[in-house]
Length: 186
Image (cartoon, rainbow, N blue to C red; front, side):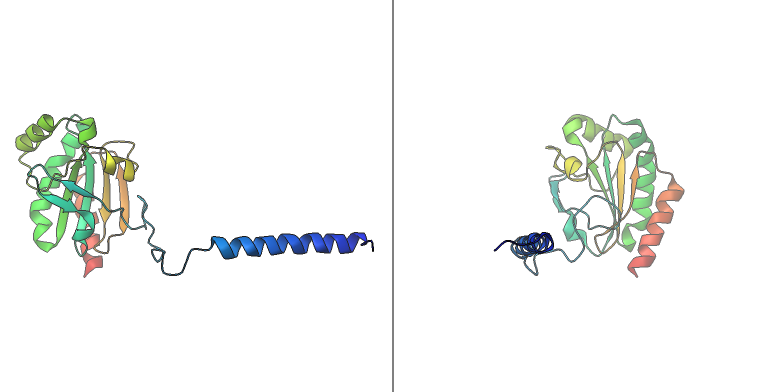
């Protein structure tokens, strides 16, 4: 029995539909294995990718342990002029807001820097906030940093609210973003 042209097309489309349904069925992600819409990505509106690094003092810091706090994550190097220019302002903001649950994490891109230069920089500027060391470049890659400094304003829920590429950030910008995040956290 020969099929006429419309019947062949119908059979062809039915096979395509069946193949598509088969593909959807077997490639579906099992329920409960997603992140509920908070996919780790280094961009506004997404959960900040987690990491653990050692600080200059040897303390281990894990970003996800800071949930419940507003976090300013700044990625920098000692040789970077805009990084040098914004650090005193970051120190000032840290001193003023840390009692309100603000954490400043200044991740040194040690893969592009030296430990000696980093330590000298911290001493010269009198920095007291945590300085995690990105010795392997893990965080620099994870956050897709293409320019130093790069800063991520992270809400108490761990979601990135704003990304600032380049610098130096002004005191007014730092204060306004931190104030917004603190209001949101209340």
